[in-house]
Structures are given as C-alpha cells and as structure tokens.
Length: 175
Image (cartoon, rainbow, N blue to C red; front, side, top):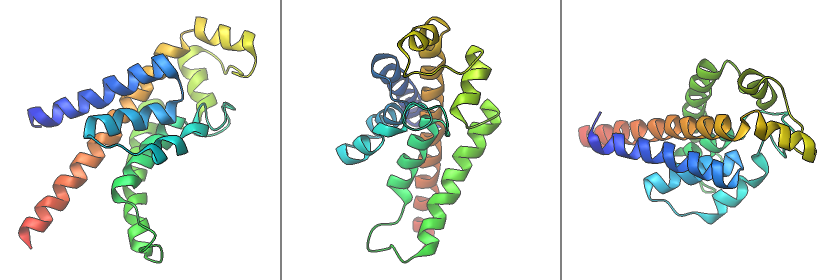
C-alpha cells in the first residue's frame, strides 16, 4: 500500500474517531472522517446522516450508524444519479461495494446491530434517551468504544472507495 493511501486511511480513522468523541452521531462522524480524508465537502450528505445515530434515532434497534454512514459514503462515490435512476446495474454496483463493507464489519464485530454491539463491547444495551442510562453508558466506556468503531468503519469504507477508484483507473487505462 502506498504511503499516500496509508495517510488517507489513517486520516479517515482519526478524524472520524475524534468527531465521535467530540460530537457523537456515528453516521455523521463516519461520513465526516471519510469526506475530510478524501477532500469532499457535501453538507447535504452529512446532514442526511443525522438520524442514523445509535441504530437509527438513538434506539439501538437497527444497524450501527457508522455502518450506515460508511455505506452512504460509498454510495456517494459509486451510486447512481437521478439521471441513472432506471439503471439497476448502477444500483447493484454501489450495493456490492456496500455489502463488502457490511461483511467486513460483521466479520470484525460479529453483528451489525447497534444494541448487540453495545452488549458485546460494554456489557449491555443502554437507552440513550434516559439521562441516567446515558451517564451509565459513558461510565461503561461507550464514547471510547464507539469512537474506535466509528474510526475503524471509516477506515474500512475509505479503503473500499480507494480500491474501487484504483480499479476503475486501471480499467480506464486499459481501454
């Protein structure tokens, strides 16, 4: 792997991790880390990820917001546009890349469901709408565990993006 690629991957990890520690919102923090590492500015995509925190809407009852954010970032680069909306193959391409992220995530964490990740990493699920539960989650190490997961997911998604860009560049060079 090139030194430049390593720096981009490290930047995605560290930026996403720091955003999660400072601001919370795993989906947004993942997108922010990826986009900052790749030099992308898109407020719309960032804002669209707001409700993805803690398995959608702070419920824990959904898949990890970091995974959702990573899939959104991958789709940003390789998804279909409005003009391509009828092109099922263009949708399939982004889905294949997002599934790759999903599979890597599940291999690493054993699940993609937020509540199950909390149980595995900090001992149990915490209802983050309850102030006492929120305090207990922080005491149990939720910020550190989730920020590391967010950083690792940003790194995984960025690796997929960079690899696919390289694959497309090689393919274009052969044409």
